[in-house]
Length: 297
Ligand code: SF4
Image (cartoon, rainbow, N blue to C red; front, top):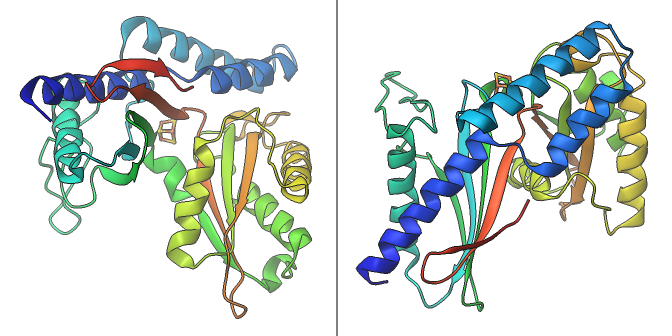
């Protein structure tokens, strides 16, 4: 990449971070509004979702973070294979530093041993970069900002799990999903969205569960069995009465997204990641010259 391309790509990274931090994607905004309409007028759930909607409007209008916790910074990048991946990684990190200086990201990343904050959001494991070369001539850059409160309530099951009576089948997976929603009540700033991976190992399971958040909320799982599981788990979770912020109500979850990875015959993991209402994910098609051509969400 020449200097002009590098400059443009850096600007694209900063703009993607700004937009992700300040604006909820359309599918999530519509789900919040749908949930709000479903709640009884004057109820605590109605009140909580009203505040959330106001917050969303203010953050967008002022181009400021939707939540004070701007979260873990997770990039998923496809890039033209002729380019050097280390150069792109360097620009992504530079973009994070610049976006932090501009206030689009809170100074949020600390050394795990000393607790020291570099003030840049850059350090081992931050940002997390998933970089994949492809044959196309443009980039697709997706970003997710995942808050600590919702990350804390992620949970992994190893089936069979006697506590909840979950066996190694899709009925058992559904029990895990409902238990995860139940355990998260009052934490993680609901209404939430669950990303679920069936199978894999302990690491790839959680990785897969987070990748489910890259899907749009309104999409349909191509696997009819998983599509049915998603629909049923969502409907059942919304019968639990937990509601927004755990205040009671009909909107406990706004979505359940499930994927499957191969597993060893000896293992059957179900990994569940929880995303809060501040579901910040955005993405853009970016030309090889570094110009944003189209937003993906
Ligand atoms: S869980 Fe989400 S909404 Fe709650 S504080 Fe964390 S980032 Fe903000």
